[in-house]
Image (cartoon, rainbow, N blue to C red; front, side, top):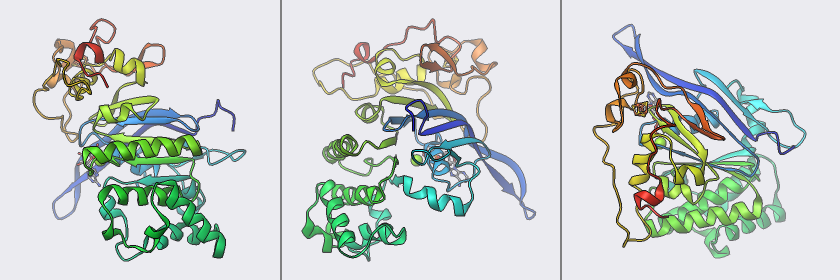
Length: 344
Ligand SMILES: Nc1ncnc2c1ncn2[C@@H]1O[C@H](COP(=O)(O)OP(=O)(O)O)[C@@H](O)[C@H]1O
Ligand code: SF4
Ligand SMILES: [Mg+2]
């Protein structure tokens, strides 16, 4: 694959869940969970998707995994060198079986995602056996390689998930996700069920693995600070829409959307002595069943003006490679990490 061809290209992706009422299950509305999301990732890339709970992050991930059929939009994925790209938004079950090994997911809750009745050896061997990748001595060698890759020991292979801590279980989930040599790992809040001290270990492990294997990560989190360590590029979502998208460095240095500024101001500083400037957002995130008119962020925005309640701001390239959906993106001069004190 040439470097100019993206590994994953998501185009105007939407997922509206119908709301049914009454005995005839009449459709009376829709949850606009994802409402026009676009981004692309190169091979070996790291992209972070960030936003408050309920903004549609998991729904995006589930559409990429072909677990949900999108309402509309495209999800182009390049399986491997020389093979044509496929649209995961349209793909059937049979075709997805050959794509599945290339895209693997790590879930938020390692307690729920590991079968408690299987040993670590069985958990790691299962995808290799089901996909007929290897067997016998070769299978055992691969399982051992995987367990060591995630910093666990050979003797852990005979144990069951309940014998491990949360962090160790997430290591097992990561090893399982790596078993089939994926090109893309979709990690949906992979550390949010873990203690803060363990979170950093898991993030570092993922980075080390990426260095060694060159795979791409789509890293989903509500925590902008955590995503910073991971991501070359960051997509900020608010009620189903992308409100800002940029490389991590310019996004942290000079955000162009007031929502990003507020999220940044709440990133804890790694230098506790620094004074921080926290922006407390008014009210709750907008309701995806009945989003506000105009800019969906306007009821909570410190900078809202009359036009904001009336006209939807399009997502536009305000600076090269830096997109924002705000009528005043080029005039607001929002505070970046330094001014806010969130040095990370
Ligand atoms: N299967 C579903 N049916 C109806 N609504 C759903 C379904 N899954 C998610 N939603 C709704 O879609 C919105 C986005 O959810 P989700 O993608 O889980 O957000 P996030 O992962 O960012 O917290 C929420 O309002 C949620 O209640
Ligand atoms: S368009 Fe208006 S309400 Fe929306 S983010 Fe920009 S200033 Fe705030
Ligand atoms: Mg989620």
